Length: 360
Image (cartoon, rainbow, N blue to C red):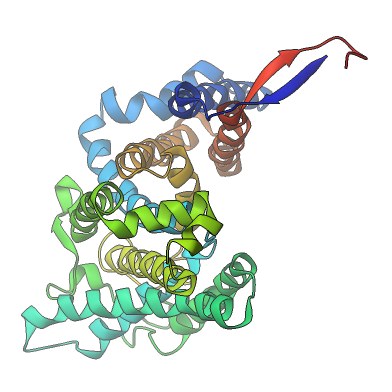
């Protein structure tokens, strides 16, 4: 029979190999899933992973990697701070929504504005603050009352979605929209757009995500706060004895995570999405959890994982349009990646042994 034996030290090999093996297992699972749906499995995988990078229309799809990848990387970086410290923010989707609402509210309140140079910086500040404030709700409840931040942050996602619908149908509804729900198109408002070069997929969200990668790398590699975050996650009692303030760490990790999610929401609503609509959120906050773990909670790994996940979004759209694959199949394919990673990750801390039944 097969038994798992605890390793004295985590395996360095499996720590790096697990994401690669998880991707391979996901491709095998995807091939079986697509075949079960009556679609050619190899062609479907080619549409997802090859077509956006090297296909005939790659010149169009490549900029979309930046558009899809930027919010995933920014949100996943924020989540990685808490995950490393044992603080589980599962509500980044809600913080993303609130950041978009707050940033858009500033743009719409200032439209039209004489001080054009002031509009977008004010939107960034409002978006960051909105995400920060929404993340502080589970943070303060955890610090003051010991509530579970997983449940609180997750439940707040549904509150944020209802607030989003209310804004799209009410306060932020375009008065010139002929009754249709949704705000003015901010990507067409010069002072409020996050686009730098739309044809190249470059907007301020991409720049901010790259800057966040650099700062996160410096934080974990060079700063005492990064050491405290890792220590709190690996050895909470040792962290307490070394003088780490757990309440301050919780608020910092959740607040930073919320601010990054809020900025991602703001740059999305003022760029690629363009408007505050009922269906503005597309699950980036949840997908970023997969990106964070696939990247091993490391800034560079998250950057690469964000690119891979963006590739599945773009390739999935291609497979849906050209092969008729249902959208739910692509979502299952993406979700399986996290399950595969969690399964393979067991080998980092355990080794597989074959033992005889009944042996002591």
